[in-house]
Length: 89
Image (cartoon, rainbow, N blue to C red; front, side, top):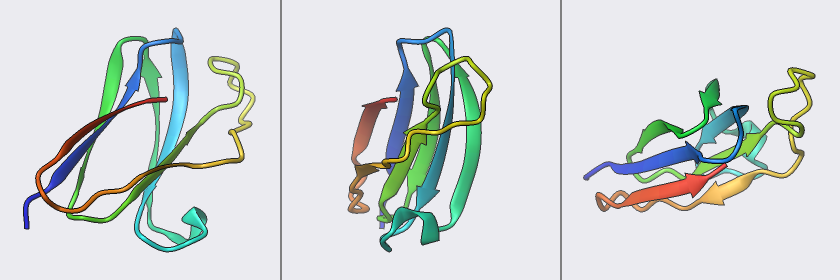
């Protein structure tokens, strides 16, 4: 099965912390964590998925380092067909 590629793109903030999980279970928090990354402006986090969905969220106040994340997760469905997706965080 081909891998899908999801790019989490930061084209807005000087820096923004993003966390992601991969899996098809709900709620998203029960899926395996992919960790978190701090993205500088005009950079991306590349994630390969073998058909498992990607959920991600960003910090509530980008660049603040206060540790607060947006409560709601954004969902990118993946189907393992070699698709490429760009998601603005």
